[in-house]
Image 1 (tube, rainbow, N blue to C red):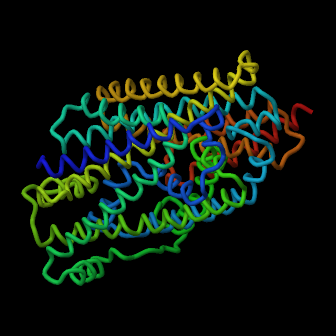
Image 2 (cartoon, rainbow, N blue to C red; image 1 turned 30 degrees about the horizontal axis):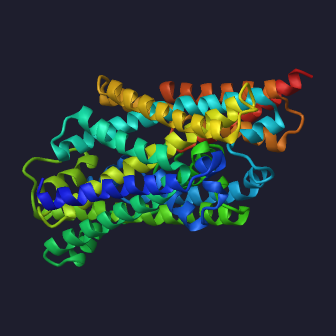
Image 3 (tube, rainbow, N blue to C red; image 1 turned 120 degrees about the vertical axis):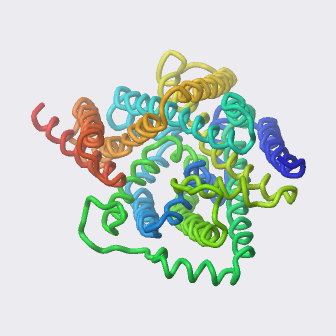
Length: 479
């Protein structure tokens, strides 16, 4: 790598560490460490939510959807509309409950409604799926970065995981959110500059991209047919996306913790709803980048065929961007940023879940703030090391196995949503029936995934409906 590009990358990593150290100096007490004192501005939380949703897969794989022949805007645009609808439903259905008390986790609401058993079951499911999935995401991000840096996979895991762990350990939620905002700016700037560079290399600039996209049918956004097995159909994206975001943003500690870090419910509502609009804009940017990459390689044939869509952007960065201008370094920083934003959020949310769902309602309920803060930091360190170990173990599995485990880990959103819906709308359903319904809902979607796969957005819909139906039925049978 050219020294200028390396300097840009090192500067980004130094800024991330510095933000962590500075945030840690001003952190007081457990609430300050885990929720930034509930004083974060809504716009910073908005940026953090968007950055947390964005992984290395988003940066490298979404352009691949429109890069490949036959690819267009349909799936992600229609899904994003569902994400916005789902966020609006969270603001109406779930957010009021989270702001009734000074909760630290989403699952404390379940304790208030059902009891400690439901709270801990939901929290444990979150901890298991989140840390396995994010450990494997660290492996995949490190694998991609190892091709750019020429550094071995273990070194990349240590670099990405170590820097993320450092600033999260010292600065807590405040460091996570402000680093997320920096990371959001970096990867969006990187995508815009890459797009501008591609346009400058084409005979007619932006017109070349536009004409190529129109000729190839890549700007198609909507499909109103009724084929529920097709993920590119409008209704699948809208309904599936709405249920998916209800589960991932309304019940997952990763996002709820950010909403609880704002001083008011109104600010949390603004951050949540506008993050959906921002995600739609982000999808449009990366999908347009994929069209631009296809137009570029139509005029500049690659040395080898690019068979996989998610290889197109990384191949372009490695082989066609000019060295020594800092642009390669910025785009590598963008790949780092996309990975680190999700990992840091996972570490902080996992520590919060253990402290507030297992320690405070249990033997450590009388600990003072200093002791709880120390436990939170040690748990952050422990989860960081655990995810790095999972990343190392992921290297021994095939890519297909890793992708399957990641998918299964994401299937709990619908079952978790169903549990919260039972608590909100079905007053007669008790703890045992609700937990049984959730486990049956989770089992049903895992079984469907393994035996009769559906379009991905619909798993949350099925999981939520099965959980609610089974919970109500179990309650009725119990008398």
